[in-house]
Length: 633
Image (cartoon, rainbow, N blue to C red; front, side):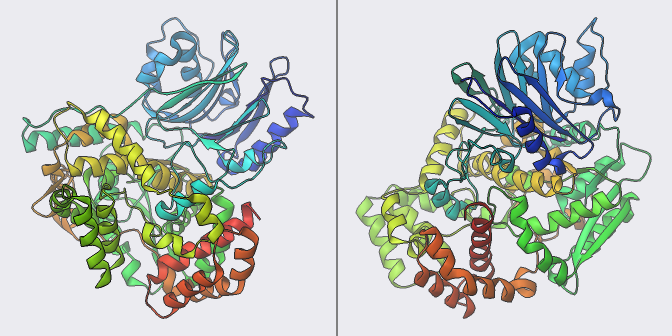
């Protein structure tokens, strides 16, 4: 795990101290790799590459980057290729000077070009300068586990693992993309290629990009979900297939020259990872859990301790107190240069801190399983509603609008009103866990000028793109239903731009590498192909995954009610956030010109009176205000 930076001055523009600029970019993301750094330059080509190293494989200087290949190609690489040893054995007659996956990856590229991507199992973002073609190639892993941002300004293509490094470049300006912000307010995330910065983009997962002497020549996918037809395969066989594939995925993700640990909540996903790890090594697995002082509703440590005892792990716990949370809150925007209004980032940060303090810099997590197997209770509600919704969707538009309008007149909760609003417009019901402000509410607190500039824009545009892609991918692959759609948009939209972004930034803030066994691309292909009737069955979410783990985990772990990854934000910091918003709202609205002060104060007043979702509204307003102050004001 590392940080990568660089730029390609293909226009030949005059630059002062370009190597010094890359050194500054490296320093800005030193937390991603505190074990070493390097800069490589080809002044005559206008190419400058930088790297910060977190040593995981071959801890000697032989693994330093940027790394030059036999054919004068040069790579900067962030991530891990878990099957690099197998790939290395296929490169017959080649002499290697390190025990790193980086050298293997570069050799594969020099021998096979982009065709080598199909054989890689791992998480990665890398850039390779090819001296033969005089082109820069950039690749992001299939699921979007590792980040990759870029910008093209005045004939200079620049890239980095984090936006904050790009903002150091004198030709890159921090300007808001208002359309991206509009979508962020609904989804709490921004889908690629956009970011909330107008001139900065992020590469799609599973894409490769080529930059030549005239700029970006292509940006194209090299991977998509490969659905199989499992309708004629029995439940037990599918469960066995999943169990074997998950075991192989965990085995791959334990490849390391340093200790590998695990986050353990005591839920199904993290417990499964710990159980499989324990079966693959003789020494105890290091596991990490956190709890919240005198807040039992937010504390799962008793369940984690039970799993730890069962598998004999070396267990470490941290109790977070109100002062820890209050001290951390203002600094969250230092980590999130791209906004993510997600309070569960807080426990992830403290877990990563605990792991690092105990000498563990590689950690396995259970991210991704819920999206692949429809594991959320509210997703099950959508699944039950879909047949009725689709029936009403076939009704005339006038009737749909009448139904929505009548219900709205008589009240009802915001979620139901939003679903009916989507019905009246003929839209897809499930938007991939849109965790921000409802579309029907959002414009109420935006400034008149901002609303006018957005015109008829609707954040449903985001969903249309994913739905069209899903329909193309799933066509003629055994049919599709609403659960297939929900898991697809969850995997393609929520996972990379929300949970993986959160994991990367919170882990890297403590120089800890997080690995995600459930997002091995082979496991993903298999999980996505499971018939929806086996993902949710008899009212049990993640049914087939739980069945596949019955020989591994106790029944009490598999079938207890999901608690969720939560934090006592309202109880510990509600008043602090509320006072900050009230004290700074006038200046915030005036300085940005994007929000209406009086409307926001009404929202805050309703929140104070308990008439709105207290935590949701407060956290989103608070986060936006401190984020703008850090990055755009």
